[in-house]
Length: 186
Image (cartoon, rainbow, N blue to C red; front, side, top):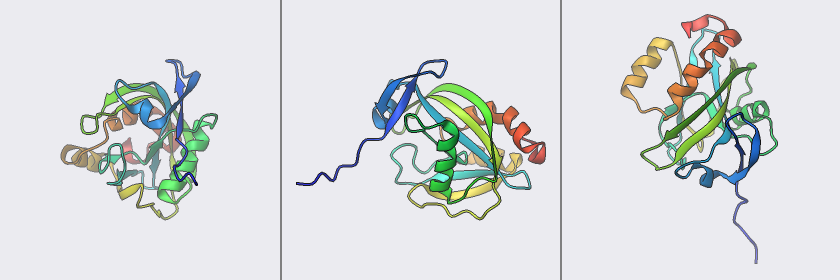
């Protein structure tokens, strides 16, 4: 008899300083009250300084159909956050960043009232440029949009965004300015 069940996806559990202290299955790490784990968030911009947003696919188990940053996810145990960020940009958006630089870290705890799941993350932030045409995976991404700061403010006022979006964007702003310069006024 064959086993058709996929292997569980494991995450790195960390302490408040970001030191690995163990592993946990992905869903269990997100169940209330949540367990602090390593994550990453990517912010990619075009040459005009517009931020690439994605609306998460409706089939995602966590925060489906909401707008969020370019890409986010979790490194596998032992995988560097930079390698994981590059891998997931390719998997989700079908493109490799032209430039990708570290933009800091932030720790947060954001419950998602819709799902009951908790984002309790030690999040590595990255900022960079994208110049190649996107080819989003429809299982991951429902829609993409490049936005100016003004367009983001209008969209944020009318649309639903991920619970973590403003926390990671605000924390990444100094690194964004370093990585992509003053283009776009971020």
